[in-house]
Image 1: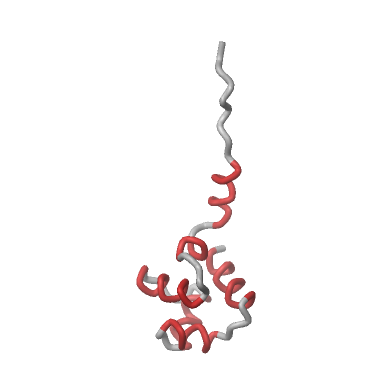
Image 2: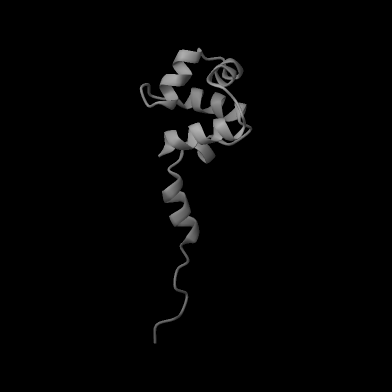
Length: 81
């Protein structure tokens, strides 16, 4: 799910694997492996990639479904009598 978001953001901005890798200071192969889930992503590289997309790392790398659920949650504020 997170990897799909990374790919989606990259395509949304019209960037290639090579462009993202170059701007983040990574090799094209390493970035490709991150996006395909074949390599683990360090926090440092997550920040570098997020900067390429002008986003916060959490915006790209946090589980978006969990975030949506939490944002839509509103506790019942009625008092129990």
